[in-house]
Image (cartoon, rainbow, N blue to C red; front, side, top):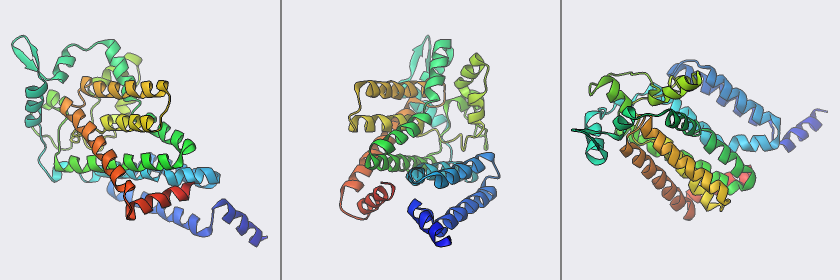
Length: 316
């Protein structure tokens, strides 16, 4: 009977070794997280979800392995709390504000306003609602699109998920090289640096107030670092999705939807005072560089291409 059970487990892809590896990684993650950022229920949710996907079926196990890129992103993003970027470089506040005003400033009487300041004075309930709805898509759309690619084309799924991780790694590097305050920070604190400033919903608070909810309040209370406005990775993600939608020749409807979401998030980022226009442009550049760099590395014979091909084989 034990021999038969072992054979069935191996056919399902579950072995004693794989279970021990999962358990070891889970315990290590929880312990390290406790030391670095303290205990949070999100950590248990992640471990629980990973365990369910691992034991549920062979296909969900492959899905778990495939989504390891997104898990790595989430863990690194969370751990940024333990190492604030303002420890390593000075935060750019006034210089970034002045650059935005010089390049994209809008005349208003005798004043010259940044686009954020202009929209702060000309906010509208319709734009509040639309901006909030667009901003809510920045997580579901990339994840949902990744699941779609997983069941449609495993190789394209791997390309998409690894490019997503690469774009984030590039963005994280810039966060530490060039710490930058968001527009709402200037509106509240001026040009004085205040360390450990908590996250802020800024213009998105009007969405919460309109619907009588605390969606964005809850999201931005978990912000890893408010001085990470440049580049706007919120602006990078929809562009990556749009690129792969075009690359995989999806229908006109899907391309149109992703195009609208992309432009909508770009506008919402500025309208809500979470990013300057230059932050959005930096996010677009970050996504473009990540896409080009991954395509270059994955298209050339070498260790990277072999690793990608092996990854594809594992989840196929």
